[in-house]
Length: 319
Image (cartoon, rainbow, N blue to C red; front, side, top):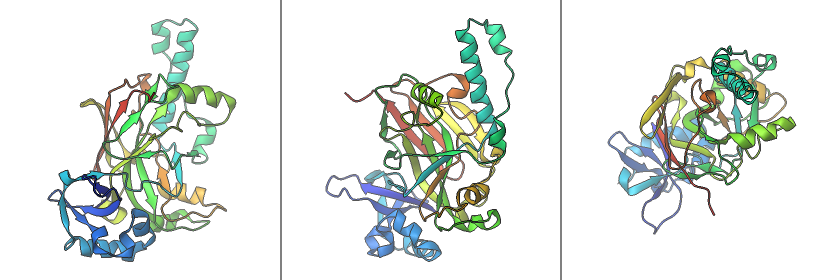
């Protein structure tokens, strides 16, 4: 089952609605059923297993709309909380090598010397605990939305990530029980202003404006419940820029699992239904790993197996 938040394409009704993206490319409008549990995706999540089962049942008889008659929104347009992690070792190590290569180039090193730089290990602490930051939950965009380049950035990047929503809160959750707290998964693109991020993190804090700008957190196209997705490990993760495939990775390469992440974050801290956890970038899944960045007008497509394609375009800064 593919759960979606959508609006009618007609300007007559601008409300967010909850539905199911059916196999025949129609939308079963759960909001039209009048059930309180479907006034928003957050309400469905908070309703727990009973609400999800009701959604399955009602989708068979709910009013249908063709997909071309609706516009998709982020599955949860304003998450109650956002955390983004660095769970893929290859990404961490390749970004570190890029930093060393850039520094060597500034020192006047030859290309042969730069090419000889070995892949460094991740910092010791990265292997001891899941590392994360809290994102801007108000800066979310959905499928098909244009993302304006922040005016202060000349090195814009994409990040191909697996996004996880919780449907059950709690504190001091053990990893072996954490799967019970996972609602489902979506595709996540953590757009990043790398030049701003690099400068501010020299101050030993951040990221801040490297990540905090309107529409920076793209999500979609749908939210697939865990029981429909099955094992979230082993999913192919593909990046295309302007229709050209740039990389492939796999969610099975995560060093830390979402269950371990939930255990770590919930240590003496209460988690809540609807919280969002990003996996961090899959190996090869961003331009920073290759010192290659986006241009205005570039269309970024991130595809994750069993979930779908999230498509967004980077557009010039607003004036």
